[in-house]
Image (cartoon, rainbow, N blue to C red; front, side):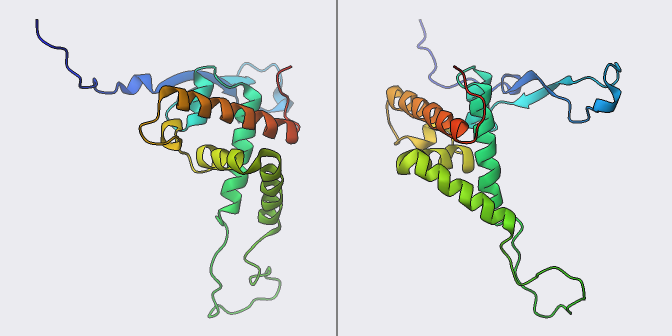
Length: 177
């Protein structure tokens, strides 16, 4: 009897895609009841896009935890300086132009304040975990030490859920009770 192969089978692309029901981004309250204006629509989601979507698709985290992770990610991306640009001293000043010498906007300062509050609530280790998974997009097996046991990954997932619950409570997002 031949020995079984230790090679993993090729990843099936259909296993990474799931059909979900989401809010319709084009929904209009002006046309309630119209069959061409549904409140919810079906969509296809890549569950390997992030650890949060993977856990949500498997039912390991609830909607409030997903919302907290999404809010953290949005704040993290806002703080990343996405809108910051270098000052162009060669450009001619125009009357009525905005403050071009202030590269950090109010939105970024508010995001920094929210992230500072989150760090106080979560502590250093919890904030590190949330930053790696929700902010930088690492997976759970990338966050734990290389060669760690399955228990270490499960502990990291438990810690992630606890941190997301704390963030959801801090931001007033409905949690399960």
